[in-house]
Image 1 (cartoon, rainbow, N blue to C red):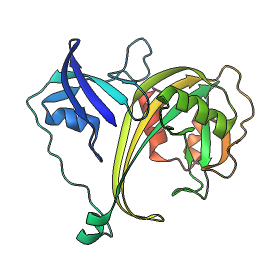
Image 2: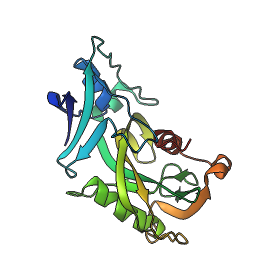
Image 3: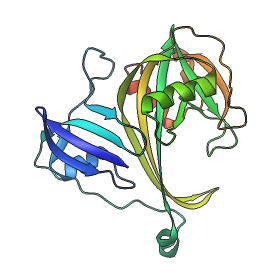
Image 4: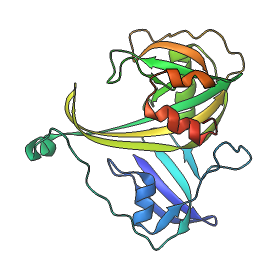
Length: 231
């Protein structure tokens, strides 16, 4: 369960459980509150959202301001699915944590294996939280498993959500991704090594920031670079 909390001037003004397929900012907007803007790339200012708790009891707390606008929520499209298909689909929510790790003008990236829906594309190191695991612990574990690098000094940056209804190689699905983005420091960077052999990662590399244009990146990477001031 993910609980979303809105705070204005230090006072809690909204609290609700994040529904399947929903975005936290949209839920707050529907209740008359706008999320405060973050300060990408400025470590002297705290982001407008904080994460706490562990998987199963995760809390996302946003700084908000009052607004008269109420967001209209349209139902997600389901390409290739009939009404009967959609009624039979079981919702799947996945909470994952990722890290932007930059060292000497290089970004730590992992390549998705053939076991994923986007084989060959490059993404940030990270992955799903285990039951009872915090986002910070998941980042440290996943980076180590996927790249062999140890990271520290984690800083939570923001939340990115995606909701998709359609067909994949798993069949008809209603998929809700909640991605918790962090920055992290690698105190002793070395040659990346994939320890989780046979999983979702086929390769890991340090890639120069000015060479990212030559790679096939998943959209999350560009969003993360903008959010952390590296784009």
